[in-house]
Length: 139
Image (tube, rainbow, N blue to C red):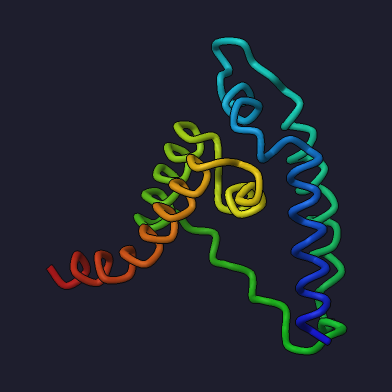
C-alpha cells in the first residue's frame, strides 16, 4: 500500500513540475536572471509549494503518518560547511543547467540527450560525494 501511495505522490509531483514549467530549463534560467530578462512566474510556483507545506508541517506535531512510520525530526537550524557547500553547488548547477534533481527526473522522458547527461552526472556526483566527504573529514 505504501508503494502505491509513493507512486501516486511521485506522479503528482512530477506532473506538477511539468505543468508549472519547472522542467523547462529556459524558464528556470529566466527566473534566476534577476538582472536581465527576469521571469517571476516560478516564484508563485515556489510559494504555492512552501506555504501549504509549512501549514501541513504545523499539523504533524503529536501525530503519526497514516501509512505508518514517523515524521522526520526537525533539523537543527545551524549553518555548517556541508549546508553552505551543498547550497553553492546546488545553486551553481541549477543556474548553469536550469535543472535540479526533481525536474531532472521528471524531464527524462522528453528532455532529450542533455537531460540524460545532467541526470547521469547528478547521480555520479551523489555516489562520489560519500567517499570524497569521508576522505576530507579524515585529512
